[in-house]
Image 1 (cartoon, rainbow, N blue to C red):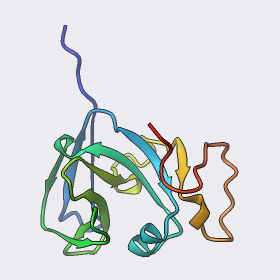
Image 2 (cartoon, rainbow, N blue to C red; image 1 turned 60 degrees about the vertical axis):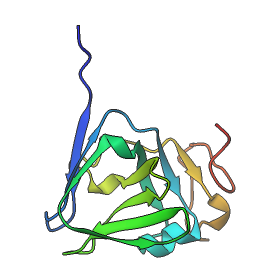
Image 3 (cartoon, rainbow, N blue to C red; image 1 turned 30 degrees about the vertical axis):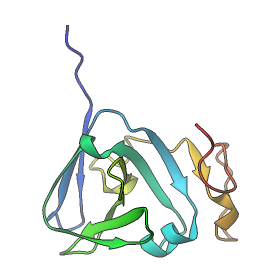
Length: 136
């Protein structure tokens, strides 16, 4: 009996970029770090982390190296910020709101809350890490 893998699809605002994520994410987190704030233009980046091999991306994307370890990937046509792509080839964070079913995945923790914006209130009961992710 074969086990079927979950496939979640999504894309950018204009539809020029589409993606498929196969299997379950490594984790689903909300990052409050300053780089994520600046890169998304939002108070935080809610994302599902997948192995890069689990993602198929179609369409023309651009990228910006926001650090030595992370590229921010966006649609070249409409500018939608889609992924945070690790430069070492291991994983990519997929923006939760870019999935077709935006309710399919829910965050399980907050990271970098020491850098969250003052007016953001976290009252969802999820675990919080002051800085980066907790040790595995």
